[in-house]
Image (tube, rainbow over all chains, first blue to last red; front, side, top):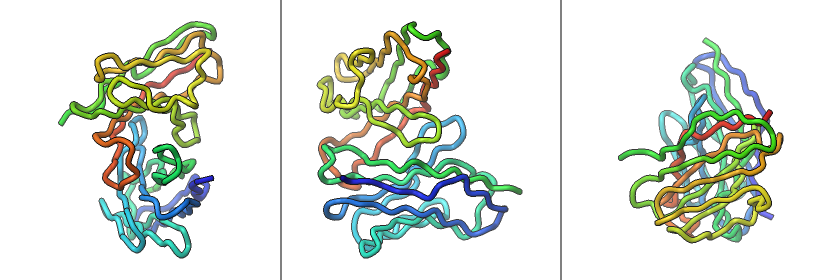
Length: 113
Length: 118
């Protein structure tokens, strides 16, 4: 069935380091892909999205490119800040999922000053 | 625009007691979701409403969980009786679209209600 797999956390980086959080998916067809972020004590909020192959979603310095050949949607940021510390979730609208979002398990990111 | 409102933010109860969570979605959003998020895991869909009708409740433990969305606006999720494994954050989300996997279908989440069952 459809699924989303994220790299396990926590990921601990120093401020200004380069960030990559891996996300791969299995799906029928070409689903829309999303990154949501959950800051401590808050609900999830959309960070970025991509709806077709080779699309690049970007927001707040974060980027992710929809790669159909590798079925991946890795999240990247060139220089992280302490305020980026949060849990990041990759998700897809699967075409045969009865209109449910399929979620990854989340990756906790810790940025040290 | 106002966000998705949820209450209470925190609740601690003994096992076998009951609890209710309330959600007010974004105005005009016809689709409402309740998710359960256990620590360290992704959200798990419990129930989805389209206006005041249930679209999907296949993962709702119906022997103890119930939910309603009267008048197609506010929603209440109830647990009775609670078990230890129900300790989680209960997230409410809403969206303006329905039955589409389009990238335009973006969920807006509330801050969640954290339940601790002792």
